[in-house]
Length: 399
Image 1: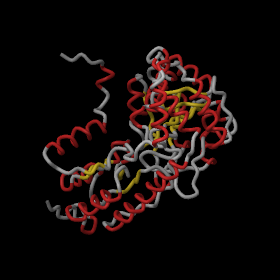
Image 2: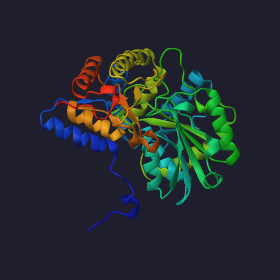
Image 3: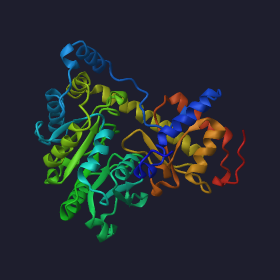
């Protein structure tokens, strides 16, 4: 008996859940797995944030139902962060909303803004939740191709007029997942101009905003004049402070959109645990040297992996942000064929690019979520076991 709705029948298994199943099975069989697939930071949550969380857990008043919109300390801390870091003024009462992780907020935003049959403009490749949540809302999506020759930026001019007319939301994501692409404020100006012209709200997913290298500073879309008329921006503590399991994030910007999202959320959840919100507020307001220290570690890992990839004939330009590498597969392979061969021959998990959308075909993603020693081991295993003679698929694969 099939009890699921027709809507659920459209949803494929979640990619990373499937990867975890395969990983567990291989570990069970005794294989030493090196997981470069999932973007779950291995670095610990900074100790001062953990200590603040433990302190707040001791307060019995914090065990009551949390505020639907987020505690005052959290919303004020987010507003203060935007003022300091971006020069953007936010009203913590109307322009900041606490989320149970940005993934939850993104998934809930879609049914907040679209009706069945409406379109959502989605970068391709991109975080799979944009597409899956659209299907769950009985919506349709239009892929905006992200091509290397365009700096992995969407070309708004090629979107068909009939799609624009039916579009009620557009997602952007910079620094990008999976591409690690970065943009400057001029790109956001173009995006805001397009969105205002056609009255299409923008949701900018800024989960990797603080994971940046050298002199690059990721801009906020809210720095663009008039952007709050049409835009919201999602932020996460998962990557900046390695708080993935604590599930805390925020959305800021257009007050009408935020109010509508808060109505949906107040009818579906009861907010994030207050001690987690207060620990996150403390993270934003305290010493940020931990962020720089972690970024330096990712930068070292990035250099090590890029050197290793080049040694097997895969050339990638160094990214300015995120802890991902978006690399071309060797000639003659599809994305799935290459990562499957690597996994079966070496125990190294990579993510096929086509898992993030059709324009991801021909690429694979590496997550730098293991120490340097394991990165070197991963490359050495590939060198030993996946011989890419002349980058041709006909190369011998040894066991």
